[in-house]
Length: 349
Image (cartoon, rainbow, N blue to C red; front, side):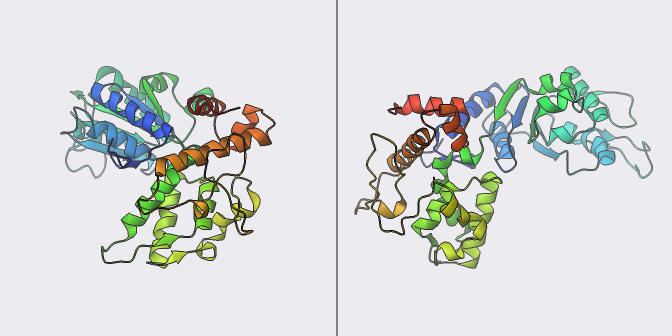
């Protein structure tokens, strides 16, 4: 990973993302095993798949993405497997499918949970036999393709209800990867915002759009149901509509500023109270960007973000009366993730 937190298009310096980057590098190097990426919409599952491909021995061959939810069921089979001339009305000539097109490379099956059962059976055969048979064909063709599947659905639930084949699930989930939601890696939000502002400031001569501290504070507290994609779309909108200006709360859509009044994580500093940026030995309100002491040499970004995270954890522990399960719920984190952070940071709880 580059020192600026960019790994094959994925941005982050949080422990969750650094762990993910290490896992991608390990998986990519192996080059053959199937991978199942699960995560909410907008968490960058295709970016993970592309990083595995681009970071491994198959990078010189094709990366072929297929969105199983976007292609009608009656067309998906011919798109994946191809067809021979005369296989159906309109098949005027033979055509190879995307599986064959990915031969030597990677086939990325996005939204695999939406694939109908008959196609699941045929895909299982591809994984088992490493061969593909075109629609209307009688002679299978050997293929060497790495399959990476992704879904925002819970495949365990789909298997339990009979909507997804259990044998295919285990074939796909040789290496499971979970894309963390943005609310579980809040320390990356500032970095992502900076990158998106840079990206959408089209011309070098343009004045750079900036955010008021209260705006940044509100965005740090928001839960981001649409994850990184939602944050990216918001920043694109703000930069386009307020190019080169300083964005205050009145320019921020109400959806994203309601957290200031209702969420204890997001403390408004309008009363003028000073909040220290020094590490607190006990819980307390997290520091805000407005109170950060800037010097001519800048500031220690990672240290400040880590301190912000520490204070959020300590505050949640305090509000929950020391109950880590409840604190994890308040922070929208898994209990195991919270405990790992507490141990790693050696927090006094």
